[in-house]
Image (cartoon, rainbow, N blue to C red; front, side):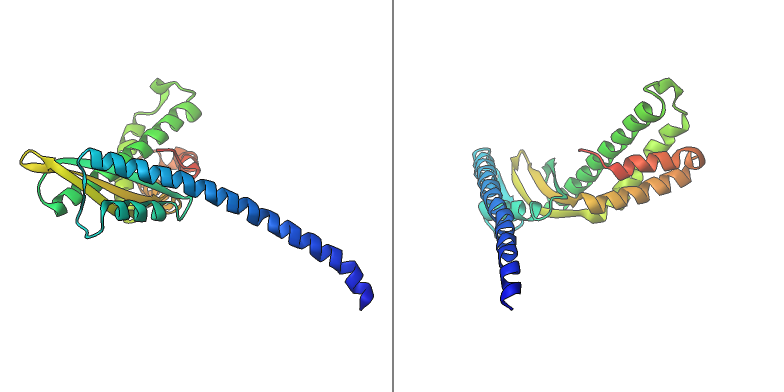
Length: 216
């Protein structure tokens, strides 16, 4: 028994040290991250208040809403923030619906632009004139279908509003998980390929671009 203790005690000690190192690193990293998030929180809420924004559709304060949003946003490194504004709307429900639609359109446009750029540069060596005309129909179909497929992955976080003439300006904050959204974009690309003639010849290459993701 003593023999095994002599052998394993230094090993166990080393393992405890190694185990402690990542924890210390993470602790320091967490502190730095939390400090940065505190700066974002303080700066954003201060600017919103200065610009006359007030939280919409909730009993939570602006500060509490923003804090809840940032915590949800940073709960997963795959999460991304989508922020859109609607002007001159009156009903909160209409404002929210229009804001979501704007977010989906913007997201789909970005996704389509990314695919368009990759197709032109990677598949046709930046010679846009050589890209088959059918791709225009494909891009349009893809963007339309991205809106449909991604809609279920966009989560409303909170909104702010301020007076604007007879109505109000409404700003909504959404969160989208890019891992889930990536699967939705794959579904959209598959459906778009089925709708257009490029399916047989180019669909696999274009699907690879979708798998790689894009930066909004």
